[in-house]
Image (tube, rainbow, N blue to C red; front, side):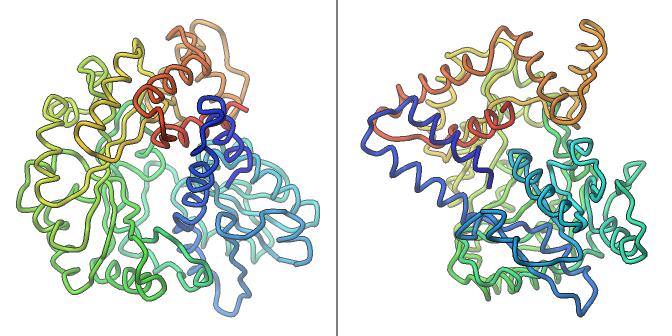
Length: 443
């Protein structure tokens, strides 16, 4: 976890709730929760591709007691270091890379951040894996063994990983840690390509599933390590294939999932049979990307399903809850023309419908159609973009805010004035984490 991200959570909270007795308690609880929330599933999967007999050390910086570079890595020698990173962890990753490269240790880096900003990691002694890595990582290992690693490994032409050939993650590597939320991935890819979202760019719009038998094997492996922890499916849209969903959950009836969470499309609200099957195992929570309550904004998503269901969000949520399924609603704020009225409506909706809510700052992310459109508009109106990597993304997002007549602080003030009106005596984390990540991006 990025130290800057943690600092921003504290700074944002203290700015708007300064002096509140609950402040430090809630901040510390939130940070502890994030640190023990989930492990890096991707890198555990890649570990299963490492040749037998190799001496592998796994470090989860969210779970370790210290993240000091010298303490963790200063007294060990490695032939190779593999790093995966989220978008707000770039500065931390850069520090780690410098530490290892200066000692002559080769680094291969992947995950969402390097996939979106590969130019920022292009340097001597480093290979960057762009996108899904199950096919690319073995190729890198073979090149590394022959002392000929390439600077970038990336699939071309929209080719995607066959999940039927994906290996079982090496969960035993992290058995020493205690996680509050653990899990596996059953499906990958999102068939919807909302204009502002880059999920299809990172994991593909081709929807794929692991074999049901393998999913069961992975779930059992996790439950053996942490039988009482909450469970998570790392899926963008778990129930996109109805036939597969029935096969999977019928096969899982002999495993008690306990409390578990996944993501899906709100359209499953009209499928009572599927909802009843989902609710038949454990205590399910489903996260829905509701995005907006504005008809105007809904049309800009270019997602026909969400546009069709947007007027029926309340009815859909009540039907899902009526089956015994908890609902998490994810909203986005910062569309052109958004004001305090739209934001107030979101918070009121979250409270009135008794859902777990999150409000996320709209971000034009590389790989999204919004980002590509803005980059083209920027160059038409302001000239060529010279920046690369994250600096380029900062320039494009600053341009977007200027177009909308706002800036980072304006949006932050609006979000927290609204939240403070609704939550005067508690620290509402439904937006703080996202805004802290957004501020970290602009540092």
